[in-house]
Amino acid sequence: MTQSEHEAGKREDAVQLPAELTIAQSGEFYQKFEELIEEGSDIILDGAAVTRIDTAFIQLLYQVQRTLVDSSHRLQWVNPGKAIIRSVELLGMSEQLALTEAR
Image (cartoon, rainbow, N blue to C red; front, side):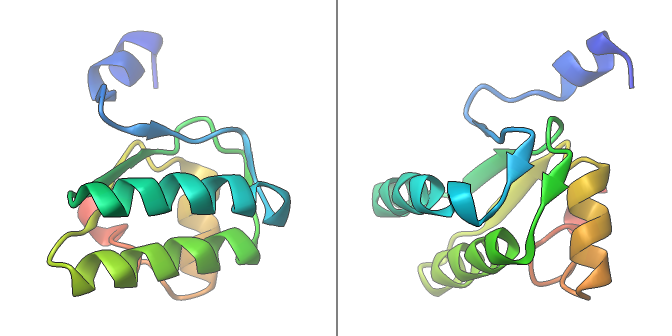
């Protein structure tokens, strides 16, 4: 993906995810996601920069998605990135995390 293609796929309201999403970042993002859930809208994630994601963070994303669905909202992806797609597919959770819609 070229820089211009990446920029074209960016949304200003998307949460920009860092290169590493591990249990170490879970607490910080848990708070951020809680605030966004309280705002009462969909959460849009841009995972283009992610190079590593662990199961603990995927569990956090799954919990966020379930909470959003319960409140008639959803998780949306902009540029989910290969690392996220690969890890989520290995766990068989693409549909649960709305990654099938991101392609």
